[in-house]
Length: 440
Image 1 (spheres, rainbow, N blue to C red):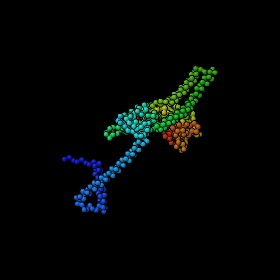
Image 2: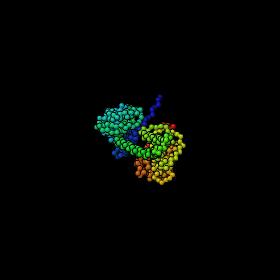
Image 3: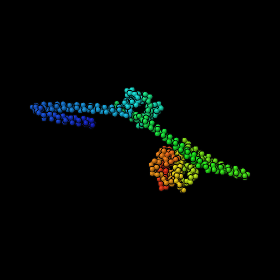
């Protein structure tokens, strides 16, 4: 003989409910027996009394069951009302879609967002409401949903009233009570968030332009520094030729010697222009380069300016790694740090002005420290430095150089830019992380 199947939890629950009703009914009957009005039952035969007792218990059980059913119906009505409030009056739109993305159900919020009625939405493809320009993003999202990839999608919706707004779609696959596949979709109006993001992008673009303009101003100043000495040499060579010619002392050898000096200095100034032009290239191509090479390129641009201001630059490198990065982006950052250090040193009457550049490696990546001996950053400035438009330079500062440098390092160079004070002055630390895409 086969084994009997184990009773389900529902069967056990029903049995317990019946037992409880039976006990409760018997308690009510016993209480009634104790009442003086029910004292005649003892005159009946025992069999009749047993039958009457069972009938009374069954009647009370039915009454109790009816009370329970009525109470359950009331609770269901309350739950239905609560569901209506939660589903229909929710601040986001809820839609039930078929496996072909046809709208099967919609709450009031969804209908309001789409500018129509719930009834008008039924059996309509959700794609009808998506802006043409965003259809590709929507179909890619549909494909991912079919592959059980749970993500969200941001598209623009065109309502029946021709209003356009941004929504974030989030959907999950589900199964109906009859086993039919469907999707539960939530649409959330994110128009205000998109407007704020656009304002932030515009603000960042403006900051980038202002920072670029400030950098260009600094570059022109650097070109002036770089060109001052070569121009003086060229001027002296020309004056020498003119003087020798007037005195009839100019010979071919002397002329060739002076022309050679002029040509060398013109070549140097031409190379300087190429350096600055490459720095301002918008595409900023990546290349394999060591940090020491980048520092050398930076010094070719700013070195003469620092030398003219009697600022020594001491470079030490213990790193042999190369990275696949945008060289001009790192040059931009280093130029800003060196300019800031130069300004800090020039604001003080110091004879031993110096900037130390130390390149090393650790487990985090390649670390480049730019430190000066200008005394450091004050406590009040330390809390605000790096914020947009905050500057310690009263007349010439824009407050964007360090802010934009931090963005460039973090977003374009896969690194971090931090700062702190040491014994003699401020130190700015660039850490560029090594990974499979940029490590040599």
